Structure formats: C-alpha cells, structure tokens
Image (cartoon, rainbow, N blue to C red; front, side):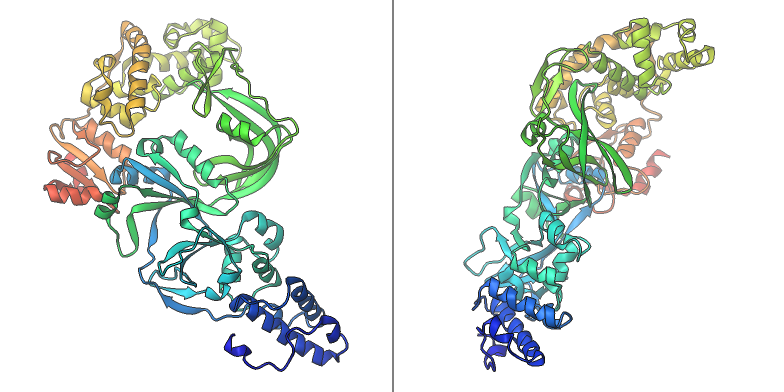
Length: 617
C-alpha cells in the first residue's frame, strides 16, 4: 500500500447514499479524501477497491458540491527524473523528398524499412518503469500513469528495455478530447505530464483511451531503394502509412543491413542509418459528389474523386486522386461516401478513411477514352492502346514541354489532333501556318509562334539527353538521361542491353527491361526527326572536367544534386553513384553519409561545393 494511505480516518468503501446524510462541509471534505484515495489505488497501486461505476458516482457527487476542487483534476504520482541505461537518440529529419533521395543514394542500402512516425510522446519501458525520452540521457519518470495505458504489443518479462510511443487514437480524440485539447499530442503531454488533469483527461485514462504502442508493433513496409526513388511508389507508401487511426507527423526510413548500420554509426544526437521524413498533416471530412476516370500519358488509368470543397493547410481541395484500383475495391468508395482527406507538405491530398457508399464505384475494365481493354499491372489498371487519344495527346504535350516548345499546351494539342487528324508526334512538324491561322481562336501571330517553337527543336537547340527524356520512357528523368547519354552516346541507345544499365541510380532489372523495349519502340520518332534535319546542341559546354569522375554526398548549398550532376556532365566529367578507388572526387556537403568515410579510406579527393565550382569556372 502507498505510504500516503497507511493511516485512514474514513471508510474507503462508504456507500454514496450514506454521504448524503452528512452536513455539506463534512461531506465535501470526505468526498475529496475518497476521490484522492481511490485515484491512488487505481493509478498507483493498481489495486482498485471499488468498481468504476462507484467511483464515477463519488466523482459526480464531488463535482456537484465543489466543481473547482483540485481533487477532481489531480493525477496522483510523482514525475521524477530517470537516467536511461542507453541514450535515447533522436532521429535526423528531412523535410523534402529531394533530401530523402540524397540520403538514400548516400547510404545506398539495397532494402529499407519504412515505419510510421507517431506524433505522440516517445517513451522507454523497463520492468514497470516508463520514462519519456527527455534530453536523451535523462527522461521523466511517468510510471505512475502506466497502469492506466492501453498497451499495444507484448512487454518484456525480463529486465530488458523496450521502446514505444504514448499516443491517443484520432477517433478517441475527436469524440472525447477535442474540446479540452488542441490536438492529440497536446492531450498526451497534458494527461501524462501534468500534476492536475482535466476531467476529460482523467476519463481518457479510465477509458484506456491513451495507448502505449511498442515500436515493434508499428506497421512496417519493406521497400527496395529503387522503389523509394520512384515517386509513384513513394506516394503509395505514404498513403498506406497514413491510413491509421494514430496521428503521424511523417515516416521513419531505416537501412536494413546490420553491417551498414554498424559502419554508419551515430552522432551524439542521432543514428546515421535512419531518418525521419517530416510531413505534418491536416485532415478533414468531406463527401464525394463524383468519380471520374482519367488516362495518363503512360496509359495508367486513375480515378479522381470530386469532393465538397475543404480547406487544408491553406489550400482549397476539391479533387482527390484515388491512386490504385486495390484501394477503390477494398474501401467500397463511391458517390455519397463520407471521406477523410489529408494534405501534408509536398504530399498531394489523399483519402485516409472511407465510410462505404450504398453503391460502390464500379471499376470499368475498358478505357474511358478509347474503349480499349484495360490490363492490371500490380495495383493499377493500364490502357495498352498506344493510339489512345488521351495517351497520345499527353505524351505529345510532354514531348514538346521537355524540348522547350511551351506554346503547345494540352488543349491546343487536342485541338490539332482532332482538326488535322494527327496521330503521331512528328506530324506536328509538318503542320502549315496558314491552316493553323484559319482555326477559330488562333490567327497569323499565334500560328507563327507555334510553328517557330516547333521548328526550333530541330535547329541546334536541344541536347541528346533532352530528346531521350522527351521520348517518355518510363522512370527516366533528366539525371538518368544525361547519365546514359554521357556513358553510351545517343546513337547507341537502341542497341543497349539490360546489364548496361545496372549502374544507373534507381534503375533495376525490371526498369532496365522496360527501357530497352520502349527505346526500340520509340526510335522511329528519332529517325523521322533526323530526316527533317535534327541537329543537337552539345550536352557539354566545356571539357574542363574531361577524364574526371565525381560522386556526391550530403546536402549541398547553392546547387541541388541534379544541378551538380548536370554541371559535371556539361563540362565533360563523369558522374558515379558510388565511391570506388578509381573515383577522382567526392563532392561532400553537410550531413555526409558513409561515402565520406569510404572516400577517406580509399584516398579519394574530397571537395566541397565551392571547391568543385572553381574547377568549372
């Protein structure tokens, strides 16, 4: 029994109806003692002597006679300081996807673990003791509240430590705590660390509405590095992570190789083998009014939900993408569905919760534009008709946008396709100014601007890597295009084999196979452009870096990683994704990864951004 309860001057099991006979002042004093006593028995000793219903009756009696008494809001038990046996390190944070890409390339593990980053209070449990992280060396002992928490996972029976998060489910917070607390995290801190707690906070403990979720119980996704470097896969992982009833403010990404973890080690502040991608989210409910199917340039069919407007993070959201067919099927979403929509930082708005519709959306297996048969590719449906008008118009828009012919927007392209019966991107080079000028809404000036922009793409204004990117090969962006051209040359593209692409960052065997197939299919475009006089400008603006190879690690200052790669290639250098003994320079920024240590071991020259820029000036 607690020392404070060693001597009692009252009967702890007195019946409430007996109290009603007492004078008000005596009754009030006794009720305060009873509520305090039973709080200790429940929260500290974990030995309640009356039922929850009896306690609620005593509590309500005291609230009626003295609503401002501290006894109503007191959570008994001292909060003391406790030293962690092993420091609880923080997690290094990233706020932009581009910075996550850099970290992935720097650590360069084959596989990673992705976990939710709970927005609660980190804590360590060891043999009945629960302590907050605090400053990592010392935390606050909040064991007095531990018996009132709902534990998700199995606690160790020995003396070992386990780690988790004290957190409140969003659904419980919205129903019971929203009036008293600003957000779930604020509620956790108020309930767990304050000496006096609101009635709603005490009720949350009684309801087991405050959870201690062990980290090994968190939802985990294993992903290859190349998958995390694919923005579509990245968006899907984020959506899957955020579809939980706990508040998150991001995700945690961990390297899986124990050898790599040991090699990367830690600073005094954080482990180098894991990072947190911070993306605080705002969520609101809305109703779906319409669902439309759209076809992208690669043939992927995406459903878009039109919702009642909601303001999220300062922006009005009216359309939400339903990214994959698996989600549409499993959620039974449809017109009239009430949906919770989340918007967070760089992440486009998506749906986290669905109240199923009476008539779920019917997934069509024919293309909404051309009527062709759709095929399932993993979680997605795709139109495989290369002549599909939607695919054609969007691929042409992408082609001219990459080549710098910005005058050609999607609506103009669709108009020309319909008016002039065009079905091939090269047909646009054969358009006549006078025919364009005759169309409503155009005229001589507009027609001249359009054809000048189109013709300019043939006349020494684009690079080989731009044209490769413009062909629209899946998963080949500007950096990969420059890398491939720099290594193999443009004319050799249709003759490459899968193994030739193994060194390209973010391209695995499957993507390499797609590249080989698509380049061969699209090469007639190149041949037809060459017949019309295609001339490239050089990718290189100088040969100052000729014969030199470079790798990049850490966050840079003035230039992004892609911009530095472009400078390397434009000046005749070679970019490499990893550090080897034949590398000439490692460009190291802030927060460098294991590449810096490896470069030092191998005797590779290390330069910062400023020193590198001196080489090209």
